[in-house]
Image 1 (cartoon, rainbow, N blue to C red):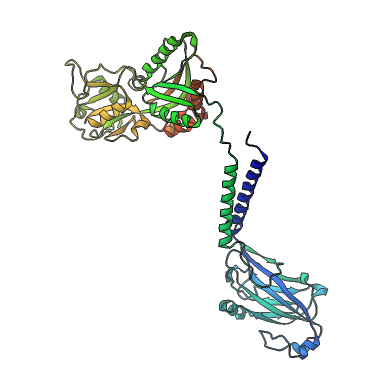
Image 2 (cartoon, rainbow, N blue to C red):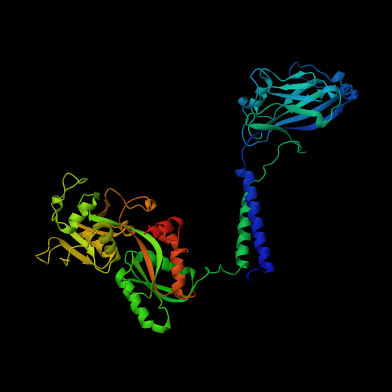
Length: 522
C-alpha cells in the first residue's frame, strides 16, 4: 500500500469526481427515462386599475372579441405560460379527455376564494401556426366562471403558448391551478423565473468540455499514481520445465505465456513428448535431485500416468475431450463403437467393405489407414481404454500408407505427436485417427467423426454418454515447496487465471463446481 500518499489520494478522488460529473451529465442529457410532461408557470399577476383602462387599455377575448378595459376596476391581469418541457412531443391523443371536451381547465381560486374570469387572449410565437390553429379549434378557448377552458393543443418538445387572463379580482399565485391529464406523462407547475425559453441543460460544447476534462483528470491520476498493479499473490521466480501430454501442450504453452507476463522473473518452458514419457522424465529428474528436493519439472498426462512411481504426486487439472478424425475423402459423419472396433481389429481392409447402421449409401473404395500414436501417448491409452476396450493392433507401417509386415491384417502406423497425426490423416485419403478436440478445430483436409451419434460437446460433459474423454493430470515429484515456481505455476494453471485459458481452449477445469463433480466421479 505504498501508493497511498496525500497527493495520490487527492488525484484519485479528483478523477472519481470528474467521472461522476460526466456520468451525471450524460444521464441527464441522454439516458434518463423519457416522459411526456406539460408544464405551466405564472409569469405575471398584476392588478388592473381604472386609470389604466381609461387610457385605452383593455383585454380582448378570442371568443367574443369584446373589450373589457372599461370595466377593469379591481380587476387583475394574469399571464400564464403553458409549455411542453418534457422529452417527447404531446399530441392531441395524449390528453385524457374526449375530442368534444376541453383538454385543460385553468382555475383561479376555489370555493369562497374563487375569482371569476372576465376575458382571455392567447398568444403564440411566430411560426407555430399549428398551435394557433389548435387554440381556435372546437371546443374553442373559452370561459366558465372561475375557469379558462383550453382545447387540445399539440405541442412539440420546447413549444409553448401564453394566456393573458383578466380576472374580476386578485388571486394568489398559489391558487392558480391547471387540471387535466396527460396519458403516459404528467402536468406540473414550473417555478423558473425565466420568462421565455430555457436553454438546454448541456450544449454540445459543454458536453465535449466535460468529457475532455474528465479524460485529462484520469490521465493526471494515472501519472501521479506511479505504483504499478502488483502481480498476483504467489508469483515465483526461476525456471520451470513442463513436459508430458502433446495433446494438452498448446493449452499449457498459452498459460505459460500468461504466467510469464503476470509474474516477472519466471521462465516456463513447455517440452511435450507424450504423457508416459513425461511422467518418466519427471521420475528420473526427481531421482537425480535426491536430497536436494523437488526438481522444477511438471509432467502432464492424459489420464493416470504409469504406475510404479510412489514419489510422484497427482493433481487434477481439467477434463479433456478427444475425437476420432477421418480424411475428407471418407464421407462418414458418425460411427458406432462396434464399427470403430471392427476397423481397429483389421476386419475391414477397405472402406466400402464397412457395414452397419448410419453409413452413407456408397463408401469409397479406399484402403483403411489407421494413423495412431506411439506407446507413450496418453491420448492413445484413453482411446484404447474408453473406445476400443482393448489394445490397438501391431504397428505395421512406417509411412502410414503401405504395409511393411506381410502378416499384418491392417495398415497401421504410430506417430509421436497430435500434430503429426492430424497432418498425416489430412494428407492420406482413407486415413482415420484420433486427437484432442481443440487441436482439430483449425485442421484442414479432415473432419470430426461422432461416436454412436454423440458429438464431443464441452457443455454436455456430465450428461452426455460420449465416451472419448479423460482427466488431465499434473504430476510433481513429491509436494513442491509452497514458494517454488512449480507450486505457483500449478496453482495458476489449475485454480488461478489459467482456468480461463483452459476453458477457452475447450477443456473443463476441475476446480470449477461442475468440474469438481465430474473429476471426482472419474
